[in-house]
Amino acid sequence: MAASTATGKPNPLKYTPGKRPHQCRQSPRPSGEHFKIAFQAPRFDAQGKKIANARFLSVDLNGVRIHENVEVPLPTGGPIENNEVLSGPLMIQGDHGPVAFRNIRYRKLQERAVQLTNIKYSLYAGDFKDISEIHTAKPTVSSEIPELSVDLPGTEDRFAIRYQGNLVVPEAGSYAFRLNYNGYLTMSVNGEKVLGTGNYAYWQAAEPVSVRLKAGPNPFELIYWKAETQNPPRLGFFSTDAYPKALHSFSSYPPEPSQVSPIYVEVGKRPRLLRAFLDFKGDYSQRLTHTIGVGSPQGVNFVYDLKHANPVCVWRGEFVDATPMWNGRGDGSFRPRGATQYLFTGAALAQLDTLAQAFPRTLSEAEGFKNKGYQIEEATGLPIFLYAQDTLMIEDRIYPHESGNALTRTLTVKNGLADAKLYLKLAEGDSIAQMPDGSYAVDQQYYLRNFSAQPPIIRQIAGKKELVVLLNQIPLHIPLSGKIYIP
Picture 1 (cartoon, rainbow, N blue to C red):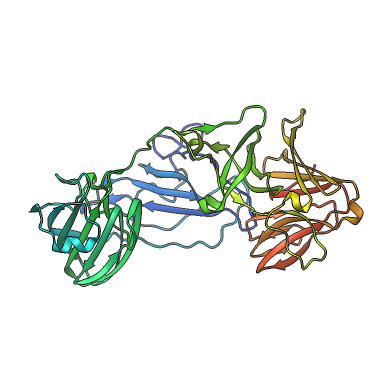
Picture 2 (spheres, rainbow, N blue to C red):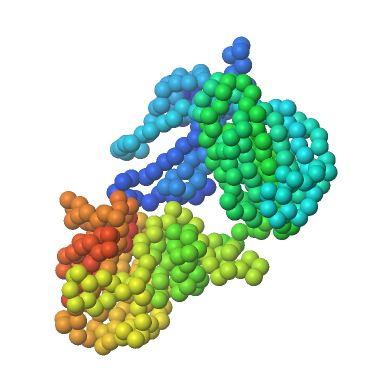
């Protein structure tokens, strides 16, 4: 039983209270919320005295980090026992309504006593064009160092370092490492090459390495080469069998501070609109150039692709980070600030002769499509997107549901709808399945349901499942994400 006060409430001096996350990243999905937790138990000396508090090294919710390096100096509220121990059972505790947990997987991370010893280095000055030139060059300095480090005299730029030493492990087996650096890197252990980067890394490379080692010392050689002057040298060597343990000096790979303060765009009492580029799924090669972000006071936000008449992502929480667009010269893009649910790209509206016909990748005026821009609805402050397809006039409204966990989309099509064979793509994914309640689950990530037009059709085109609907009734209500309710 937890320590309590006279009021029956837990005594905060004898237990660790909860800590609010950096930001809310819940996103109701058919598959539930996904947590990834890295926890470090308290540590004790040989006499049983605690020498280090427990801590949550990181907590990720739906792929977004919400806690990092949170110290837990005392038991949490309602523990099994009040004594702290090195190991114990996993207990999930909650008293705020029913909840289900599934697919619980864990890996016990035992720190392994890995060391780098007897480290020697040779420094080579010069503008090396290829790493092979280093093997024939003469060093300007050769010496010993207590820790692996690139923070040495003469290592500003245009240099190479050859490190040699022993990688010492307590027992034979496979060991995992990660090398972080900018420049070029090659490494061999026991005379066998285990890492050789193919390209020069101008910024923040991270190379995982798995090596079979014998117990005791294993000779290693590491060559680091840096030719450009834009960024300072950085070299980190981590043991990653447990939580990453640095085998280098702090100054060789220090935590990198943000170069600028982030520029966040906030939403007030009225919706906020911002035009910018969007890198779909964070991928620059999938950059969308005609997008507009819409942030709502309810915290349900989306990005709409004006070029293709389609919402491309939705999320809950804060609006957008405009730092990439407004810092310095900028690149014109923003980033959603949340656990973003990406939908799909490309045209979502088209006249199809048959259901076997694919949607076009783009919409063009040559094929009768015209973008009419958007109007701001006075009552809500939200945009109404306007389009024309031949003689058809289309109004597209997307607004947050009052529950705060959904978006509702209303598409209104006028002029000749009955004969148009105009189809709307609602979703695209590897899997789309109709659920018992009539909703549709897309890739087990989000729901669509409550259609006021004909029932949607699931079809397969080019290896992908699509959910499409024929627009022969108006208006058409299309919820996009979350646990949806139709007003």
